[in-house]
Amino acid sequence: MPEPSSAVPDRSYPLRRRGRVLWLLVLPGVLYCLAPFVANRIEPRVFGIPFLVCYLLVVTALTGPIVGLVARFDPAYREGAAEFVPADDDSRDSA
Image 1 (cartoon, rainbow, N blue to C red):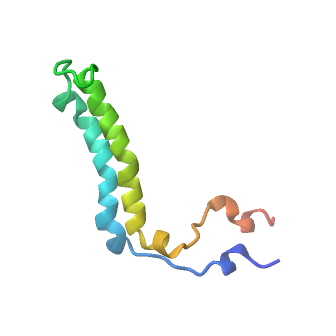
Image 2: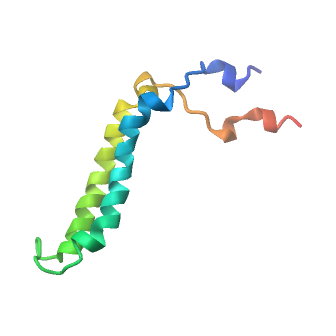
């Protein structure tokens, strides 16, 4: 049986090449951490809900598109390269 790792060419992308776009993944976490300082008030109400809840809903809604945007700019995602998952490694099971 062929080795699973030999079927997938080794394409390691340096973090320098991916690093700038990956920093966008920090943005949702920062926005959540800023919530108590920026949006910790009940008034004004937006669509009848307190501002803090509306702020958290907006940040949650923005998280998906941000992750999708980062994935689109990732070279491995664009080329359809397979990701290595440690569970796929059969070398540990051949004891």
